[in-house]
Image (cartoon, rainbow, N blue to C red; front, side, top):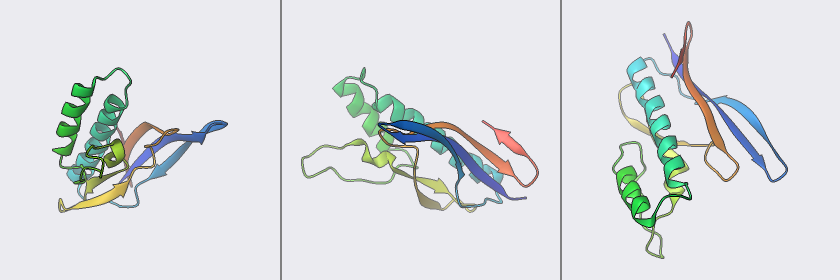
Length: 130
């Protein structure tokens, strides 16, 4: 059985927005690794929403960034030439192949006008909603 991760996200510009359905162009044979990848997407997006909040203090943001950088799905990044980190590490993340190796994926649901609405796993026979 093959599994794929599908998602629905909103994108747009100053004049309007639209919802889009898409999927990750990788098919898993190992459901456990597909679920691990799906959970990484959900965790990453939840943390992105927290760090993008206007109500978060500078200290809370710094602690959150340290936590995010320790995550297995977070690409390793360096400080900018100005000596601080920005949220650019959310634009891509690592997902997990069938054997557990990581591969990098660009996240189209991250951006000024973008948001992730839903993510789910489908197989040739079943649909799993998380």
